[in-house]
Length: 267
Image 1 (cartoon, helix red, strand yellow):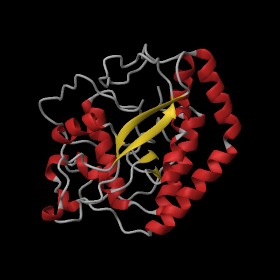
Image 2 (cartoon, one colour; image 1 turned 90 degrees about the vertical axis):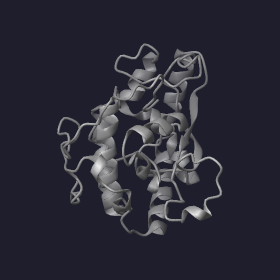
Image 3 (cartoon, helix red, strand yellow; image 1 turned 90 degrees about the horizontal axis):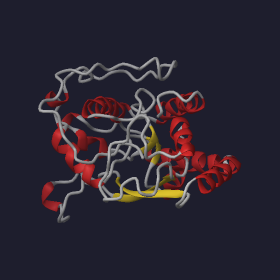
C-alpha cells in the first residue's frame, strides 16, 4: 500500500543533512544523475524557486510512456492473470485495490491571483490502482496506517507481491490514462500529503512533475517506515525533478527490473 500513515507523529526537528548517494544494497548499477549545487543542502535551506523540472519534450515522454505501458500490459497478461487468481483464491475480498492519490500540480507556474481552487490539495487527485496485498479490514476505521516490515495485515500472497513490486503493475493503466508516468515521485494520499508538506520542507515541490510507478528514490530506498525515510526520498525526488529527461527515465526503468526480480528493497 506504499507509504501510509495513521496517527502521524512528526519528529520535532528535521535532520540537518541527508547524504545523496545510491544505495548499493538496493541497486548495483549507478544512474548518472549529476548532483545539483543543492544536492547536499538541508531541505530547509533550498528555496522553492530553485526546484523546477528540467526541460524535456513532454510529447515525446508521453508517447514513450503510453507505448511502454501498453506493451508491458500486453506482455504481462499471463502474469497478471496468475496474480489475480492467486489473490482471489487466497484471501477474501476484491482482486484490485484503489486509493485516491495526489498527482501533478499544474498550477505551480501560475500567479496566485489566478488560483480559483477553494481548497489546495497540492495537486490533481486521481484514483490509483494496484493488486490488493492486505486484508480487507486492514484499515477498518478508515484511517491510513504506516506499512511496516512483517505487517500482520499483509496476506501470504501479498507479501510476495510487495516484495517483488508486482502489486504496482496495475498502475500501468494509470500511465495510459495520463494520471502517472512510469518514472516519477510516488504519489501520496491526500490526508498524508497534507501532513507531510507541513512537516517536510519542499515536499510539495515533488508535485511539479507527474508521479510515477518507479523512480530514482524507489530504486535507492525501500518502503517508508518513518519520517526520516520520507525526508531522504524527498531529496532524491527533488534531484530527479531538477534532472529529469527521457534518457534518465529509461535508465531508471532498466534498474527497476533487477529490483523486482531480485526482490531488493521490498517488504
